Image 1 (cartoon, each protein chain N blue to C red):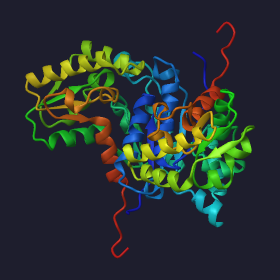
Image 2: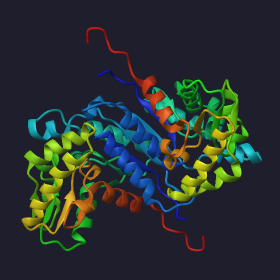
Image 3: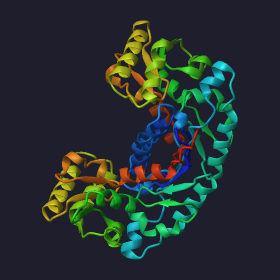
Image 4: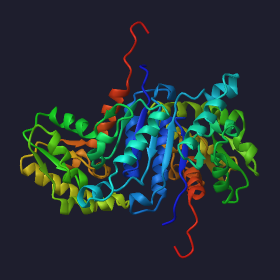
Amino acid sequence: MPGWRTIGVIGGMGPAATADFLALLVAGVAAARDADHPRVLIDSNPHVPDRNAAALHGAASPGPALAAMAAGLAGQGAQVLAMPCNAAHGWAAAITAAPFVSMIDAAVAEAMALNPRAIGVLAVGATLALDLYGRSCPVPVLNGDLAMVQPAVNAIKAGDTGAAPRAALAAQAARLAAAGADVIIAACTEVPLVLGPGDVAVPLINSTAALARATLAAARLPDRVGA
Amino acid sequence: MPGWRTIGVIGGMGPAATADFLALLVAGVAAARDADHPRVLIDSNPHVPDRNAAALHGAASPGPALAAMAAGLAGQGAQVLAMPCNAAHGWAAAITAAPFVSMIDAAVAEAMALNPRAIGVLAVGATLALDLYGRSCPVPVLNGDLAMVQPAVNAIKAGDTGAAPRAALAAQAARLAAAGADVIIAACTEVPLVLGPGDVAVPLINSTAALARATLAAARLPDRVGA
């Protein structure tokens, strides 16, 4: 087994997405023994200033809190940082304490590997307002209807992972596919908590899972020759 | 909503159990908004010296590593500490950096609330060798057959959460119930990853879930009068 760099997770936005990300990190390590896993340090902090209020209404920036969390994690030994929250990537420039794996870049890379002509994005709040995916995608981006996606995300945040939010998000994905999107990115960490590949007619990229894969790739140390 | 103390998690033993514990913590908070959740700091460290080797073969103690992890979490702000690993509780005395919520005590308390005449325990390694449950239970403890429980736990640690380990653990639970246990404690964090209440004829206490409930109870700040 290769060794690993220590992973630091800037989390809590929201808490369920961070739990989902940790489960995906663990599942992504093909290891029979505990000791073959990477060390993972997590700061799940649900009190970071609201990303959407900052982007939409000029409220306090989350940047300083994210920078402090990154510094705290790096101080405890984190060598690779990841942040399972799309919207918070609007302030990713504040994270300088250790190498940072971008969730946006990870999801776009997985989408672009499918050679799409256009990419559909299911996102809310700051992710949409700051056009985080549009700025990173080399092909056109079609956004879901915020009036439909936002209530579904709110319901999931409140603990409803049932049929209603799934149906609302599936309908949006179908609309984007009909409009020409060859692949859909679940670009809000709540979305893949209910929406799976079986709910969408075109490939669905789970941005949380894409980040987990990219984070493990960045954390993995090369096998030593002869080791 | 009440406020919360910051929770610190001494984790990684194993990594999947820590991910399960975080998911249970998040699910245990009845909150509609991210900001109503507690902050949770996690050190998921799979490189702590092996608890079972220490208890069974006199190998290096995990105590100093656990003490260092606790100190690191407290240094980052953790005010209540929890450790989702039964076996590691053999060295719980090393954890002094902040108030510690015992998983053993949490599971025993939930079992004793059912007024059992005897408690069945599905455990392995140091949990058994150090008799962690027998020392804490005020009623007799019946232990599962290690020759049957250990292979199931090993399979789960290697990622097999299918029918085979579930059947093996269900058979052990049935044997303990037949021998007089009125309640079974899943006293290894891998066990509840496959064994649920529907698999056992008597009540089943999930030690990971019991710890999550006890941790949230310890972290919750009292509502302020008039707030």
